[in-house]
Structure formats: C-alpha cells, structure tokens
Image 1 (tube, rainbow, N blue to C red):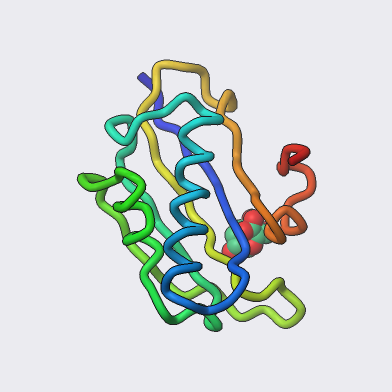
Image 2 (spheres, protein in one colour; image 1 turned 30 degrees about the horizontal axis):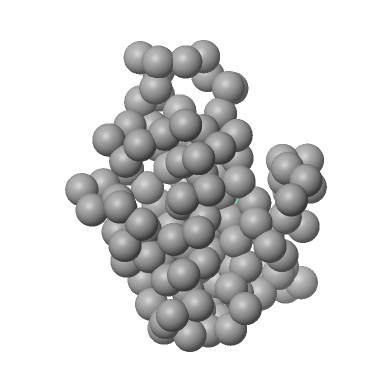
Length: 122
Ligand SMILES: C=C(O[C@@H]1C=C(C(=O)O)C=C[C@H]1O)C(=O)O
C-alpha cells in the first residue's frame, strides 16, 4: 500500500449553505469516481474555503456524500489578491495499492482556472 495526496477544488456559485454543501458533495463524489476510491481508502481530508464562503463547513458536504468516518478539517484559504472567489479546496490523503502519481486531481467549475495543467476537459 502507498500513501497518496489527492487535490481537488470547486467554485461555489453563491455563499449559501445549500450551494456549498451541494458543490462539495459533487467534488468529493467526482474525486472518488475518477480515482475508483471508496471512503474507506481515505486517511484524512483537509478543506479550505476562501473567506467569502461562511455559510457551511465543506466537511458536512463530504459527510453527506458518504465520508461519515473520515477525519476532516476545514480552514480559511489565504485571501491572495486576484485569486478566484468562492473556492472550496481539498487535500485528501489515501492509502492505495497503486503507484504514487497514478491518481487524478479534480478541479471543477471555475476552479479549473487554478490549475489548467491538472483539470481534465469537462
Ligand atoms: C492554485 C491553487 O490555490 C492555492 C495554491 C496552491 C499551489 O500553488 O499549489 C495550492 C493550494 C492553494 O493554496 C490550488 O488550489 O490548486
């Protein structure tokens, strides 16, 4: 087994509880699908949210998507001038029986602009 770190990010349309939870659930689901993962493969997950997202913890969206027993943490992202607004980011640590570097990082919606080198064509 090998420890992997998997990145993800998505942009939230508006700072509302429902939209934060829905978009975070979509992000974690997409990450599991693209990497053929289950929640049991995950060791821990860190979420950050830009300071303009205050209405919900992204971890709750992940729990609603099935990550009920995954240790998670939420934090505020650095407010770098010019960085995209309303972004939820994640760093997931997983223990997988596959080579390091074989995972797919997931950048959805407006977050794809953060790392065009990583974002798959939607
Ligand atoms: C570019 C991003 O935004 C920030 C910059 C990062 C980087 O330069 O690696 C990683 C996470 C964020 O703090 C990103 O989320 O990928």
